[in-house]
Image 1 (tube, one colour):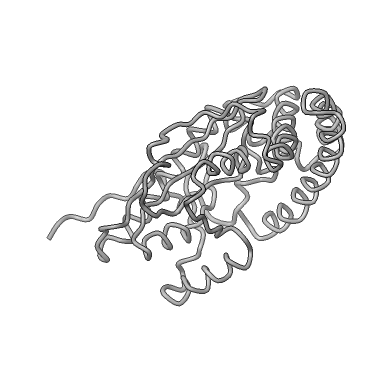
Image 2 (cartoon, rainbow, N blue to C red):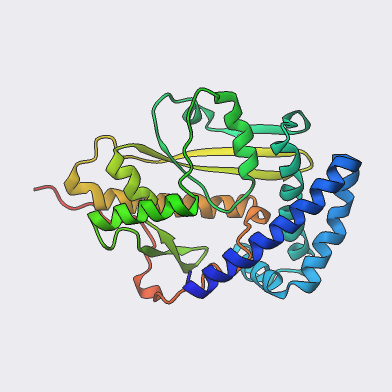
Length: 278
């Protein structure tokens, strides 16, 4: 994404999310989940009618997923799904996991005792992932997504390679979009496996938690590290695109994710070919 799009996304959607959370917090505590969910309809309608940037971004994204122009009711459903996960956040953070049915895909990866790097996306519910992790209280999780941690990581990567933290364009849903290599470089430096994670909202009170192994850098030789990092990023984009098609309304980047200065000529469409052996 370009700098202006990123700045706009960081400023507006988070502020809107906090406002929605305050409203949902009050309503949820006083009315309960079943009753307070009805208020999501006018809230989603408000965002549909009076937040044109979000409406436009939703249309653009859904058109890429569906391969046709998105209908207004589909844009509404997209926004409503986001509002639903914000609403459920109140209960999940309050420890009311009993209200939800959370299923797992590839739980055996989650149960693995080895240390690992987990990489997500602004897709589905992080609170559903958090709820899943509560069953593994003995396992320590350190968040790398916080701004201060991200700055430290990027500074470390810059010492190793000035270009290490740069975004790389990949073809995503048919168009080039920029994706960060930094998390994969961290996993490679630490010689750890890296997994994709997402907590998809399925409607009602149902969530599905996905874990997918992207790469294992435990035994990656230094000479093959760059190729392995690019292959892991390609795998990440492949899984993300697949989940977008399976659960299209769980994509919560309400800005033009494909807005970038990079040329499509430089976007990768498949994992890089392996170098021939000596």
